[in-house]
Each structure stands twice: as C-alpha cells, then as structure tokens.
Image (cartoon, rainbow, N blue to C red; front, side):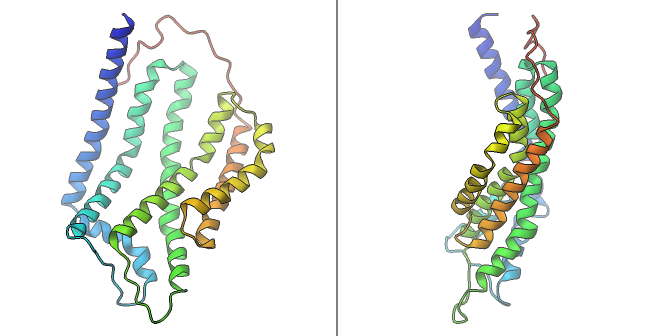
Length: 254
C-alpha cells in the first residue's frame, strides 16, 4: 500500500469514527429532548444557584430566543457527557491499530479511568462547589439588591467550571502517562511539587470567579490529585519499546 493510499484509508477511518461519535451524541440529545425535556434538565442544572438565591428570586433571559436556546444547549451538553465514554472509545479505537500490545492493554483502562475522573470532577463541582460558592457570593449581596442572574451567563459559567474541574481531575492520568512513557521520572515530579502548587493557585485564579473560596476549592484538589498521581506512578515503570512486528497497524477495532 502506497503512502497516499495509507493516508486516505486513515482519513476514511477517522471519518467513520467521528460519524459514530457524533451519531451517539445526536441520538442521546434527541432522546433527552423528548424526555425529560430541555426545560427540566436546565432546572436541575440551575438548582444549586436557585437554592442559594433569596426565596422568590428567579433567573432572567435577556435575549428573544434565549429561553429556548439555552436549555437546548444544556441538553446537548448532558448528551455529550453521557456519550463521553463512547466518544473516547472511538478515539482509542482509531489509534489502537498503531499501538503495541502492551500499549493497547494500558490504553483501554486509561480511557475508562479518564471518563470516570472527568465525571467525578463534574460531580464534585455540581454537588459540592456550586452550593458553597453561590451561598458565599450571595451572602455579600446588599439587602437592597434583588439578584436575578441571566440564564445564558449562568450557562457559560457552568461550562467553564465543569471543564475546569473535569480537566483538573485528569491530573493523575497525566502524571501516570508521563511516567509510563518515560518522559519524566517520579523523582523529577516530586522536585517540581512547589512549582505545581503555585501553578495550581494561578490556574484556579484564572478560571474560577474572583472569590477566594472557589479558587481554593479548585487549587486544593489539583494539589491532592497531583500527589495521587505521584503515588500511583510509583508502581508504573516505563516499558522498553519492543521491536515493531511486520503486520503492525493492520488490525482494526470494530
């Protein structure tokens, strides 16, 4: 097979994987849009904020089509999160034929662990961080002000926070992969601990609201997860690269 034919076959495979991933998200989106519906899903997402607002306070929509579009975006977000394990599997299946056998055995658990940790990060943000942060922020509001958050601004805030905490909870995976690939040793990562701690607080100050509580609640888990990654990396040594077999890259994953 020529280089051009090989490149085209890889593009066809990539398109097939992308179509499957998008189709999975689309099917889940339609199912969620039918039941329970985009409105109830948004109400669940807004629950931490509504619990922190004074009794009788409501959110507002300043755009003409915002009351429709924002719940639809939330439904699409939920559909993508539910389909995330399948999307990551498609990504793994695309690169798997080019991996060695020991790399395939390591990659699949990596996909599962990445999905679980991302969901843990989002769940920690929704069930714990949001309630504390919203209560803390609105506790400083003057009594003469009636809070009425905009639903589109709230959705943007939620997306930012979910991504921040979801990606933060992937830190152990990053540490383990770096050690496993032999790019850095556990000893070097331990020496970098002071810089990681400073970097965690800098990152949290950038991606979270300008209050100390939310910054602290992101930076501390980052440091703890870094330590967890160091602990796990102690049991994972870099593997020597085996000789590539002749039929490497010929197998496919269904």
